[in-house]
Each structure stands twice: as structure tokens, then as C-alpha cells.
Image 1 (cartoon, helix red, strand yellow):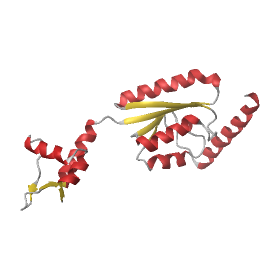
Image 2 (image 1 turned 180 degrees about the vertical axis):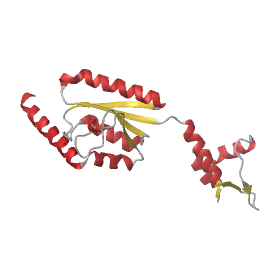
Image 3 (image 1 turned 90 degrees about the vertical axis):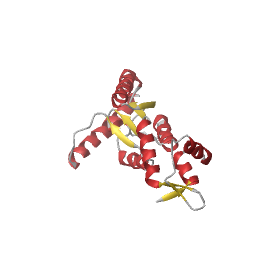
Image 4 (image 1 turned 180 degrees about the horizontal axis):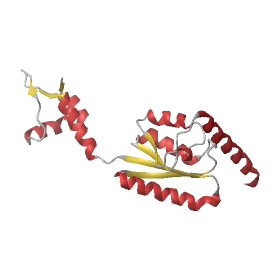
Length: 186
């Protein structure tokens, strides 16, 4: 399929005059010209150019670390270092690490809210965390679905073993009891 210069320019992220200049410099040539000498570019050619650009661009990721109490600040720093090392190993650009010192059941965590706002505005390649339960103790599927709407994946560095429904329920109950038992001490 052939497209006009204006559409081709938008797909390239440049102006139509830039495409005309590129033609003179023989950097990017139109596929053909109409009888009226209008330039036409192949849509396949445009897609290949975009794929080439995507490969050159670094994948931008965001990090998230969380601990339940202020006594665990060393663990928070440890999580942040792990996230930095993991992103570096993967060849990703770690734009920012958001963090929280609160229960995983607390929905009002400012760090998590800022992270989700950033996902909506910048649409990063991924969110990385040490374990999936660092994002939230429950309903991580909702966060996952939200991120997927912005083409962002959630990557947990350390995968938890697959559990059946009963084992998962026991884990959730233990997390609930632990959370509520810790409240009087805080």
C-alpha cells in the first residue's frame, strides 16, 4: 500500500520538507511518483524504518521497591540495587525507581500511585520489581491489566513458584494475619 508524503512524514516523526530533503540527499527515497509527480511511499518501507528505529532505541523501564516498615530500609536499598543491576544486565534504561514503605495492602501508597501515573504518561517498556508481591499483596492482576493497556509489562526478577489455588489462599491468609498483627506494634 502506498501513502502520501504527509502520512509518511508523520510515521517517520518528521516534516514533509524533511522527507523532500532526504530524497535529494538520497537517504530516503519515495517508492514511486504519480502522473502529477506526487511522491508515494510504501507502507512496508515505513514499517521497516520504524522497526529499525525501535531496535536502536533503548528500552525504558521503571522500577518499584517496597518494604513494610521503616526498620527495613536496608532491604529497600538492597532491592533498589538489585533493580539497577537487573536493568543493566538486560540492556535497559532504568528511568526511575519508585518506592514505598507501607503494607502491600495499603492502596494509598504514594510511590505506587506515582508509578502508575508515570506508566500512563510515558508508556515504558516494563515495570521491574524483585517479587510480584512488592507491587501489591492482592489484586496484582488489576495492576497488570492497567499496565497492559499502556503496552507495559510487569517483570518480577524472582518468580514465585507456581502454587495451586489452595496454596495461594493459605499464602494470602498468612499475609493478612501478618499485616493485621503488625498494626498494634507500629
